[in-house]
Structures are given as C-alpha cells and as structure tokens.
Image 1 (cartoon, rainbow, N blue to C red):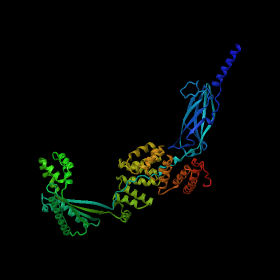
Image 2: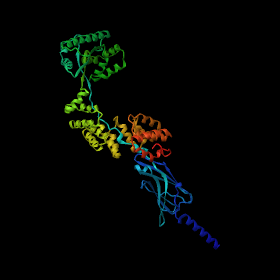
Image 3: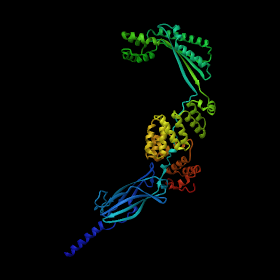
Image 4: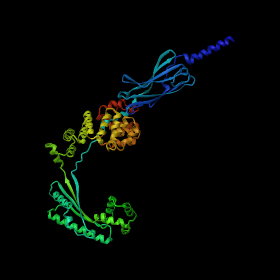
Length: 561
C-alpha cells in the first residue's frame, strides 16, 4: 500500500512536470498558415493574416507567449503589432491554448510598404514567460516576399484639371423686336415701325453689316394671330401680317443699302395657343389655373375657344391683357461676331499680350505643344488677370505636368483663394495631396470637386492608394490609363485590363510592364516576353523590378532580361 502511494505521487509529479514545468519546445513553420502567401501590397500597406495551429501536448500550461511578426529585407527588419496567447494555468485575458487538445490562434499582420520589401521574409519571433523564467525561442519563417503590383499606382501620371477658356471664334447673338397689330387687322402702324425696339433692331443690322468682325447670318419673321375667332380668319390674318412685315423689312434693308444679310425667312402661326398658354401661366389673372386646365383637357382649337369664352368674367381679362400680345410679328436678326484668328492671337500675344482678353490668352496656350511656351503664356495670363482663377489653376497644371509640384501646389492654392467654389483647383490640390501621401487631405479636396468630368482618374487613383480597389474600378469608369488598368488587374478583371491598356494612346514603360503582369497572371509566356522587353527598352529600371517581382516567380525570364 505504501509503495502504491509512492508510485501514484510520482506519476502525478510527472504530469505536473509535463503540463507545467518543462520549457516550451520551439515552434515549427508547419504550425502556421499565411494568407496571402506571398504577401501583397494593398494601398500603401502590406496586410496579412497568420493562423497558428498548435498541436496537442505542445503548449505547456503555465506559459505565456508573445509573438512578434517581422518582415526582414535588405539587411533590415520591421515589426508588426505583437500578439499574446497563454496556457491554461496563466492568469490573464489572452487567448488560451489547451495543453491536451492544442488550439488555433489568429495573428493579424500589417506593415507600411517599402519598395525593398519585394524580396523579403516574414518571420515570427517568440518571447516566452513561464513562471519566473523568461526565454526566447528561435524565429520561424512563414512566408517569402511581397507582390507589389499595387505599388505601380502613380498620382503623378494623372492629368490635372484644366479650367478651360471660353474663347469662341464665332459667337452668335440674336436681336429681336415685336410689331403689334390691332384685332382683325394686318396693316402696319407707323407707331409700331417707329418704336424704339424696331429702331434699335434696324441699327444693329446696319452696324453688323458695316463691321468687319460681324456677319448677319439670318433674319427671320414669325407672325401670329391670337387664338380667338374662326381658324380661316386667323390664318388670313397671320399670313397677312407676315407679308406686311416682310415687305416692310425688305424696303428697310434696301433703304439702308444692306445686301448681305444671309437668309431672310418667314413663317406664320394661325392660332398661337402655345404663346397664349405661356402668357396666361406668367400672368396674375384670377382663376388662371382654370384656364390652364381647359387648355390641357381640350385639344380641339374650336372647343378650347368655346370653353374659354364660357368663362365670361375671365374672358374679359384675357381680351384685355393676353390676346393683344399675341397679335404680332417678331423680327429676329441672327448676327455672328467673328473672333480673332489663331495667327492674329499669336501675333498679338507676341507684341502686346495685355490687349488680349483672358479667354483669348488662355486659348493662346492651346495653340502650341511646347511646354515652355505654354508655361510662359500661363505665367503671363496669371500676371495680367490674377483675379481670374483659371489663369492660376492652368499655370499650376503646367507646373504639375513638368514636375514642379511645389509650384503647382502654390498656384492651385492661389486659384482656390480667388474662387473657393471652383472644382478644378480643388481636384488638383487633391492630386498634390496624393503625391504627398496625405490621404485625408486628398479625400477632402477630391470631395470638393464632385461633379467635375476629370475627377474619375484622380478619384480612382486615390482609391487604389488607399486600398479600395473595387471602388477604384468604379471611379475610373471607361478611363484608358495605366492606373485604371491596374485597378482592374487587382480585382482580377484581366480581360477588361487588357482592353484598357490597348486603348492607351501613348503607352509608356508602365503600360508594357502591366501587360507583362497580365501575361504572368494568364500564363502567357509570349505576352510576358514581348512586353517586358519593351518596358525595359523604355525604362531600364524595369529590369531590376522584374528580377525582384514575384509576379514572374514561376517563369524563367532570364533570357528576356
């Protein structure tokens, strides 16, 4: 009996030793899965999830383990947030791993991306506290490398938004005058043809005929009869008013020696119900809604008239206020103002730019593809017209396009101060913020530019850089750019990405590199070879990038490089 008790105590002591007292064995790489593997850049970060599967009889009961993920690359390392878990006998609030059954742990990992991380290793470091003892277990490598395709997004390639000039070579202006007639008459009255409105119209026609920069495109006569009375009578009245007005106008043109007046057109409307409805709607006549209701309910002209006449008290107001305004002929002169030719604008800019309007000088910048000349024009425009936000914004666009981002930011900010509600400088300040990785500021500024046609490219790039690739695809729409194609690659829409890259009008090294990535992702060796060669030809730095790029890890690209 005594011997049996001793043996039982000895066995219990062995259990205690096994479950609590012995040191923790080193972890095996086989215990851990990483998703994704290899790691991938998302926005400006490298996120992943490490899942540990701890086997039974492994995790001692009185151990507390702190796991720290490290990404090691190019002789340096960066750490992610540490994570703790513990055995069953430890007092604490960390996840517990059973000694008898083992268990699972989930370790979130995130690193700020650096280009050298493409060739890297993800390691887990283990610090153990066991009672009064502390010790370190060997590190375990759990993943290799980072796929950095998302890092190809580039805000510098997004075109800043031009605030366009409003220059028009031909501006059409219309001048009109009404000649009124008495009821049931089509005779021109002297008081009408000598009214100020008619005199002013005639003078505009004379001035346009004499001016070198004006051209009379057309003169039109529209004659009307009010809708009361029989249709055949109203037809004769409207037609007679048209003829009387045409005869008068032809005589006036002859008197003023005007022979080049484009086309003279004329037409008449027997019963002007449309004009009647507009005048009633704009009037303060009592029960006008009743009249409008009649017009909407009855489409036959005679029935309409009868229904309105039945409203005897209202009809008197119509006869007094509305119907006389419909007995008229309207003469309209369509006159084109001819602006300066391209050569004239160039010559004037060279000799006296201050004599150009702001729209003319902004238009002058579009007459050359030379960046230095455009920059000079926008600087001149900004100095002459500093209170027009477009001059400052467009100067910033040229500075941005030529890599002067500090100057561009100053110009965009100045444009925004001149016109805080203008969308173009807001979007452009958002682009500068993207370049500076100030995503909070970029979000605010791009939001202020909502509705701007050019916003899609900037907003799509913002979403890639902040890791929302699906939103990026939506924002880009049908934009044909490297960034748009990149968003489609990241969301695995390879067919659409290929179409987008094919539609880029001026492909560069990045365009071809993305096509090579598409070749790798669709297992097309020829596509990889052809496009990598072209990318490296245009940009030698693409060679080292391809060597380090895990997109090509499963392909032999040595002969291409």
